[in-house]
Structure formats: C-alpha cells, structure tokens
Image 1 (cartoon, helix red, strand yellow):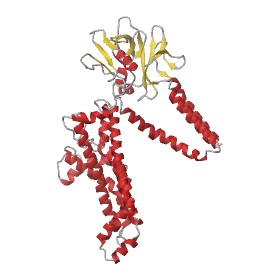
Image 2 (cartoon, rainbow, N blue to C red):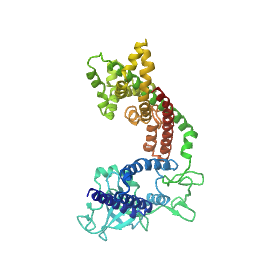
Image 3 (cartoon, rainbow, N blue to C red):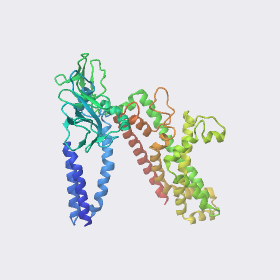
Image 4 (cartoon, rainbow, N blue to C red):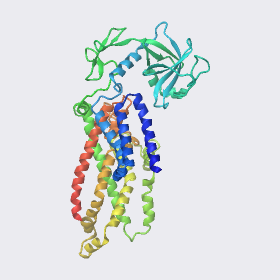
Length: 505
C-alpha cells in the first residue's frame, strides 16, 4: 500500500509538472518528466532492481539541486544574460515596440485592473480590461489579448472595473507601487499596436513609434527616421556608429567574452586581482587565527588538573550556538562610530568600516569570535582520541612537553583535522555573510563603486548580478566559475598534500 500511494504521488507530481510544459511547447522538458516517471515506476515495481530503489531518490535530488544548477551557471557564463538581454529576439522586438506606443486619436480606452499571473511580488504582470462601450472584458498578457470567461471574475457593473478574478491575483495599491517599474514597461501586443497603462485605472490602445522591418532586420523610429540594425553577435540593435541607444536586447552566446573581461578590462582586472588577494588572505587568516586560538584553549581545557572545565567549555561554545546572521549584525553595531560599544569602551572615535585596514581588522576579529569555538570543539574531540600512552612514553624517554606536543600530538591532530581545515578554508572563501552583513564590501574607491576594499569574490559577484546599476548575470556567472576553479584547485592540491600525514599512523 505504501508503494502504491508513493507511486500515485509521483504520477500526480508528474502530471502537475507536465501541464505547463505542454502549454509552453517545452517538449524536451516533457520528455524528461515522462522518462523519470517511467523509470521510477519500473524500479519500484520490479523485484530485481533492489539497489536502485535506494539510489534513485538521492540521485534525482543530486541532479536537480546540484548538477542542473552547476550546468546552468556554466552555460550562463558564456552568454550576455543581463538586464535588457533576458529573452529572445522576438521578445525584444515586442518590448521595443510596446515601449514606444503612443496614444492616437480614436484609440480605445479600457477600464484597467492591474493583476499578476501567480504571486503578487514575482508573477507576470497582466491587465484585466473592460471595454465600457462594448461591455466586454479581456485579459491582456505578453502574448496578446484574450476574452475573459464569464463567471471567472467580478465586476460591479457590466464593462466596469474588475475587482476580483479566479485565475489572477488583483494587486493592491502597495503591491502596485512595488511593481511600478514592471507595470510601466509592460504592454499587451495587439493587431493595431499595443495596450499601455494610463495610471492605475485606465489603459489605451495605441500605435508604436518604433517599428521592426524584417527586410532590413532593423528598428525604425517614425518620428525621427533613425534606424538601428540588429547585431546578432551583441544581441542588440545598433546604429551606424556602433551606438546602442535601445535598452532592450536579447540573449545570445558571447563565447569567452565574459572571462576575457576579467583580464582585459583595466578597471575590472585591477579590482579582480585585489579582491582575489584579499579573498585568500581572509580565508587563510580566518582559518589560521580560529585554529590557533581554538588549539590553545582546547589544550588548556584538556588538562585534567583544571577545575570547572565543563563550565568553561559551555561558555566557549555559547557564541557557536547563536544565529550567525544575528551575531554579524550585533557586531556591526558594536563597531559603529557614533554609539558603538567598541569605541565607547576604548574611548575612541574611529570609523572602523571607513578605512581599508580597520575594516579588515574588524572583520577578522568578528570571525575570530565566531569561529574559534568550532575549532575548539573539533580539536577537543581529536585530542581526546589521541592515546595518552604516547605522550607519557615520550616523557619517560626524557622528551619535554613542548617537544612531545610538536612531534607527537600536533602531527596526530593534523591527521584528523586537515580535511576540516580545508573545508573551513573553502567555506570562508565564499563566506558571503561575513562581509555583506558587516562592511558590505566597503569602503569603496571613488573610481569603482562596484568593487569595495573588503569585497570577497562572492560579494563582488552578488553586486554584479543584483546591483543597483543593473544585473549582469552572464559576467557574474563567469566569476562564479572562476571561484569554483580556484577553490577546487586549492582543495585538490591540499588534499593531496595531506595524504602525506597518513604516514604518521
């Protein structure tokens, strides 16, 4: 019965996933869904595939949450995917023509209700339209205008403003304000031109001033006569002098251009190399200071002659039990110049995050407080696993305590802790919270506000992808690939080097 119920759930999920794929003509995706579903039914209904019954769920989750995102990131790194270059060429042409729509005498005026297809914050914008003259109601999407079915919406009067819909989410005023940019850029294509919003309660059908000519593969402005020809290599419409005044373009493959920008653009190259140096210094420094302090405290509290060890250990691991995000925010306020606890206790008037050196010092101090307790825990466990007979035998042979620690205890510790140190380095190399929640990557040089003095590659990538100057997902993905190559190379070399430690055993 459990097997039947489980397979029924799988079939229901497959059907739920297949319907939107069919509507969007995504036959490749539909084939994958059908193949995975058929494979699941075969494996769990067959008595001969016992190992795969246990391997299939984990394999599917691995592919869905690891392999596919990695492949998508790598493929994005070879494109110009960014603001203005998100969709196809046809979508770009529609957007350009829709943005240039102007009202003409005699154009139809609709009563407008702003809505979304799905979630109010992230769903696609749709126009719920009513024609006061014909008393007909329509839904306008990016694909065009379609009539609304009777009984699926509510309107106080025929042809009046629609107040509710079964299929769409009607936006409130605050939600409209939050999506204002999306609403302004949205238009509904029609045979005569396009429908644009005119305030919050009206929309008009107008004609575009900029039209596409398939013969010359260009956009022409009816008012000025200017012409911009399609450049499929750049994914943009360009003028004769190479200028790109039209913001809307389309997604194309640009090869290694995003990677080349890192090393050929003077501003980006200088910032990238500086960020890489600080990134390594931050990751190595964080591991070194937290491991050093954790080692000293662990050795001290591992002494059986010390009293109250349990109480001390409880206090030491207390920061590790706190939410990391909350602790970063607390420390940021403690370093505040005007009312921070650090300046008040030390009698200083220092803007800790105002200079590069003080920002780096503050960040490393925060990392020390948040990270040494983890090292203390793992080192304590490793110390307790080392046989005391070895150290006692060394003492009998005349070895001093420090010599016994350096030649016996510490090498045995490294055997157990070397993999943890490598993974700690990899984690801190991409420690987004440590920078973004404290210094936010600053201070920033006046000539490059996108790359701060304490930025890591991960925060720099985030600012490129989601910064206020416009998203550049292709370039951000390229840097993400470089981050992966750097961390993977360091990890592989480190693991190979640490294999020599196994000879100690």
